[in-house]
Image (cartoon, rainbow, N blue to C red):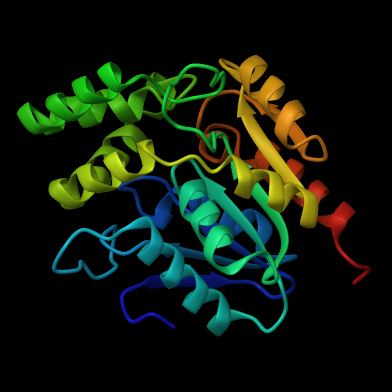
Length: 262
């Protein structure tokens, strides 16, 4: 296992590996550790430079994040795992698929992330334009606390109902090295993982959770590029926090339907 990663594991059964999003740690999946552990081995980890994982001497590239994930999967389970990646964690998963294929995967689940983050001509499912991301990077550099708080609140369908969690996640995000975070932001924005998203949906059972705020564009993109992928709409970008039992039920139903008999 990579010595740089902080890993938690709970339960016994088919393995599920959760990847958190940009600058955040695995505590975002605490509810799922409790909900899914009776039936699965639930594994969460902090990507390098986030949470309790070791920071490198320089920013970590997506390719290096993918290598860390490969080392983790190689150590954790001899059997293929279900990989559940949230937000920009899905870009780590796609980078892993690009470098290592899908042999280690039993199933793949993306939680509300587009394989094409940057708005370009002809891209209907994206995370914003160059101007919008430049403004976000500028705001982070000028007043990181304010920008991070607004960023975290935007993930929630009802942030006021989860005020303490918003504060905790903002603190977790701020703890990540800013320069490394900005480098990952830039690298991810220039990537296009259309081929990897299509490949994984062809080769293993695949599910996309989609925030209803933009699910129409996402569904159109998935119909064109990943027609075999299953889709579940959810409220907000963090359904595993806002509706943890509903999310856990939907995830377990998908995994149970696509797994060999136990």
